[in-house]
Image (cartoon, rainbow, N blue to C red):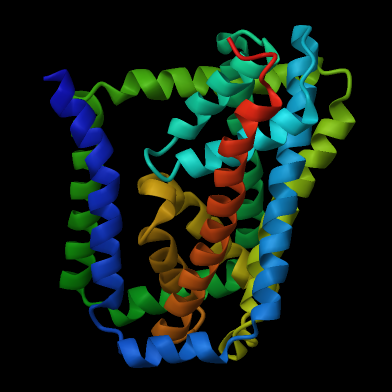
Length: 319
């Protein structure tokens, strides 16, 4: 029974990714899609990769501010290598990288595993707050456009369309509730909320709070700029504003949790969100895949090298 649950938990993100790939390409001309890859300016893609790498390095440096109040020192090199390794491992099982990251830093830096995991939970709490802030900023700035689109949808829809839309939303909410209750996810949600509160309290107790906040802001600014500058590679996205791209980025970032490393669902989220702003599906999907592939390539290269290097530079600390 437990094995079946574990298999379902591991396989479901893969099924979601495969379905999203099928769904996104079913109405797309593949020859037209491939053509965009020959026309894009790859200089902007490399700028995006560079900014993405900077955000990961900043995250590695920020980690020490969470570790130090616990009475331990964290080596910067080991921190960088474990962070990149964790991102790579996340492509196998979602969030498995966090457990691996805690395990590796415990082994190589002699920091108790439970304390290392506690700091990672606190880090995720800050990430949740950061992305909520970005969403709020985007919604406030783009409020008129979003409200106008919702108004147009309501005006153009007849009673039966609205009724069916309401029933579908109700069905999804009811299904999620039953799934949560069936698999006892509510306990995990409770633990997550507890971790969120604990993470916030750790920040207020931190001696170098300002430096921690600076790196937290820097990380997410790099993420947004990574998305923005990569979009510059596509001529067809020049009409999309910075804040419209920011809304698209947040939706794409949230989608990553539903499949292994965001495969399939990340490009689809980019395509669907940009479609709100009149971007052609093929361009939006091509941009989504370029974003995903470029960042995945960076993680695979640096993450693979990190996993290979870690044991060699920590021979004296290996247990």
